[in-house]
Image (tube, rainbow over all chains, first blue to last red; front, side):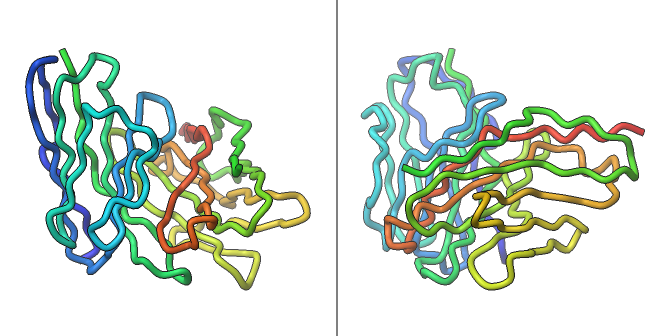
Length: 114
Length: 117
C-alpha cells in the first residue's frame, strides 16, 4: 500500500465554521506533512510532524491547527478561515531516513471558504 | 537558502516530439533533487529523484533527468511525448539542513507540459 488518503476531497465552509481535514497512510512513515497549494502555484509547506511531534511550523496562522494523533493519521483543524485560505491542501508522508526521502502525496482536499 | 527556478511556465509540444523541461537550483549545501508530476485536480506523484550516485536518473515511463552539479541543473527530458504526458511538472529540492530526516521540499513554480496532437 503506497497510498496517502485524504478526506474529504472537496470542502466548502463558511468563515465562522470549524472543520477538519484528515490524512491517513499505512506505509509505516514517521514523517507527515501538510502543504497548501494555490491555483497555478507550487505547493508550500505548512507543517511537518516527525515521530508524531511537530517539528516544523512555517509561520502558519493559528486558524490552522495540526494534530497527529498517531503514526498513521494527520489532521488539520480549521477555524475562522478567510476566503484567501481557499486552496488545495495536500498531505504527504515519508520515511525518516537520510537515505530515503521520497515523499508520497495524497490527492488533496479542495477547500473553498465562502 | 535554497531555491528552484523553472524558467518555462508552459511548454507546448507536438505528440511524439522530444521535450526538455528546465530546472536550476541554488543551494550552499548538498541537496536531493526531485521531479513531481501533477495531473489536473490531483495530488503530486514522484516522477524521479536524484539522491547520489549516477547523475542520470530514469523513470519507468520514459522520462530521464541529469544532475549537473557545475551548472546546478536537473533538467527533465523525454525523447517522445504522448498526449497523456500533459500535466504540470514541478522540480523540487530537499532541504538537508534539517538533517535529511524530514523531507522539506522546496518547489519550483512548475512547468505546464501541453502535448498537442
